[in-house]
Image 1 (cartoon, one colour):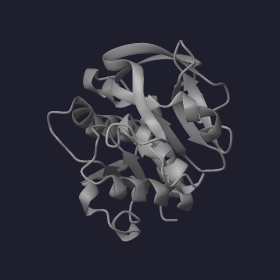
Image 2 (cartoon, one colour):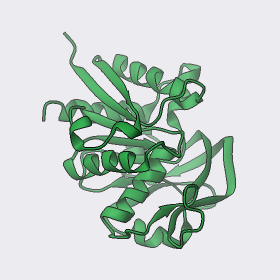
Image 3 (cartoon, helix red, strand yellow):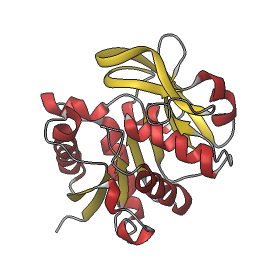
Image 4 (cartoon, one colour):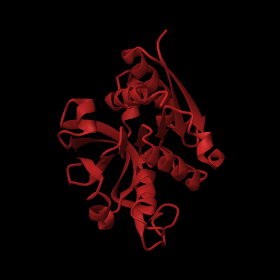
Length: 235
């Protein structure tokens, strides 16, 4: 029998969100290619009050469509994956909140905020993009010798977005000069993906790679994520 991998989808499910429609397809396609069984569960952020609710999974995927009903729940899940070596993928809102969790709990910026939910905060780690990326596809340059570049076997890709917020350039240097590294950029050099060095798999992208599955295409980054979940299963 094929191995079974279980993935916790951190976010607040809504069937009208294209990324939420795509994620099960992306997981199933990746699992078929890897010859494993995949199970997944949508975990509403308001239900995450302790690590016990998410520690049973082989990996966590923090999904698009924020603001979340409970930001603290999402940050708790991300922090658990980061500090316990659990494979983690964050896309769109997951990217934004991975940066916010790192800022608060690794850099010690307890006043770090998301500009969408705290527009008057002085330390908006996540701020409005200079140009919103709503239903836009764009060229992305990948840093060589990174997990994301290895997953795509390329250094340039085109992916889709649906977002209006991203990494605030004012805090970029401090955020990505340590173990958390920028690994993908748009044409203007803005950060579009990050990875955590020394972690089995901790990757977050502002773009939504899962959307490829809506047109029947494989999603390389989800394949890489599931492969990491396989390696850590039963730990």
